Image (cartoon, rainbow over all chains, first blue to last red; front, side):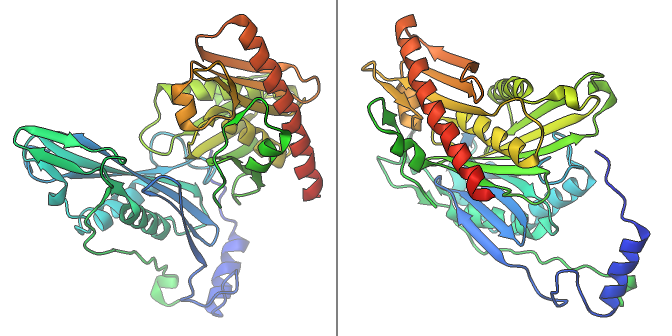
Amino acid sequence: MKEAPLSSCERAFILGALAEKRRLDGRQAYDYRELRIGFGVDRGGCHVQIGETRVLAQVSCEVLVPRQTRPNEGMLYINLELSPMACPTFEPGKLSEVGVEVNRALERCVRDSSCIDLESLCIVSGEKVWQIRVDVHVLNHEGNIMDTACIAAITALAHFRRPDVTVCGEDVTIHTAEEKSLVPLTVNHMPLSVTFSFFEQGFV
Amino acid sequence: MRFKQIGIILETDARTIMENIRCQPSSLTRPDGSATFYEGDTTVVAAVYGPTEVKLSKEQIDKATVEVTFKPKQGLPGCAEKAKESMIRSTCESALLCMLHPRTAVNIVLQEMQDSGSLLSCCINAACQALMNAGVSMRFVVAAVSCVLDSEDQIVLFPELKQEQDAKAKMTFVFASNSNNVVLATSSGIISPKLFQKCLITSQEAGTKTFELYRDWLSKQN
């Protein structure tokens, strides 16, 4: 669906209000909306709400062959889905420009900042490593998807527990949750993103 | 809020079903209609946009095009998801008065929040609640009931994940509110025709109780 363009009187109203240091919902310039984090039944599932923007994140793991360039590191894959329920302009399937931007920013924030220790995900170097997959679904878009998605991804990764593995010579045994308690991921730090908007070339 | 897992057996009374089925209408602000449906721990969020603009390739001159998208919580959507979408779409097409809105589209998006069994029935119920919330004209409302036949030939309604996996046969029935007829029936596994009929009748009773729940929720909303 095409996006409905913002009318010129709406635009003028918002800019005029901002010039008087007023926002549409009564907040001050640096005020944040209410943040709510909820966890699901499954480990690694969390639901974050900033104001009315809602994002759901779920972490899952799988044993795969590692990349040839990095044989002793696990893999972290982040998949952002702008669900058509969040906004009528989001199409299912291919990510729009906004979606690609947010996905890339999320990857930089979570993967490139090395907040998860990937070397601890190695089982047998060059043969078996854990691939951690984070699926982030945007459910409702009322602004600031970036921050909400970031918080959801980090919280889900911190909440997640992977199965325990024992390597005995050539044998690799992956234990079920009943045999051995699940192991958390090694989280080094928690990167968070904060979004600022500049109006009128930075004067507002 | 977490609810107790439900895996009720034939002899249990209506109260158990009614305690574990919940609905949160208008849970999202952007869509025209939305609902979060809980069947025990299983949770599905449904959003409806419509009747709205439709792509020329999918336009139908005499009725509205119903499009359903189901998104699983983890991984990319695959064949199982497409199968669910097609079942939900055919149910909604029967229930909606599509002829009132020609050359438009009704988009239904479903997101799995938690799967602890009976997912298809939860999806269909959530879609129906979201359509009601959006105010799209419907011929009748629908109630979906999941039913399994366990290894001891016991009928279990709204099974948990473990019960579903160990079951001999799994069925989902969808009933219409005006006539209590079957709108959709899907099954897998091995079951004798007599037992199938018994499951159908049991599910129909559960469906009637679900319709009473719907009426209760609507009256409380107003």
